[in-house]
Length: 174
Ligand code: ZN
Image 1 (cartoon, helix red, strand yellow):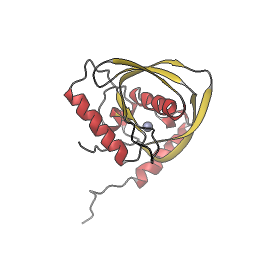
Image 2: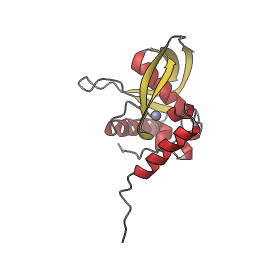
Image 3: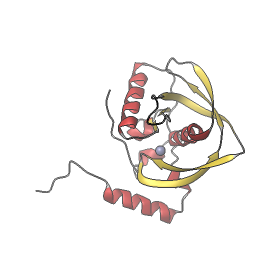
């Protein structure tokens, strides 16, 4: 397994639409393992392939509590089939937008169809944190970020701040 580099704003790849998969091969299974490794390492609860620079409709999620057993879930070609009228609000962060939290209102529950690791079509009804997290990650596959709903001014300020504080361990001054 490999820990991948997580891409952050303002990288243009984050705005691109990811491609659906035709079949699940050993390469995708490896990628999913790497996504989990990368997500756990960064203490995230969800990660989409585009966030490590791969434009495939793949995402991983684990919304288990820290003291609970891990519950890794992977989704290939996920499609939102149904959402509730009722909404909920979470303060959301994003591994591609470090140190930024934004209140986002989304449908409280959703039904999602996806392909599992064995290439089988599955359906899941989600509520609570899982529902919000899954909707956030599916947004990534469509090139949408949580800062997209902010005014341009606010968005630019956030991106400017991130670009400034971005750590660059390879940078040397001689
Ligand atoms: Zn995100």
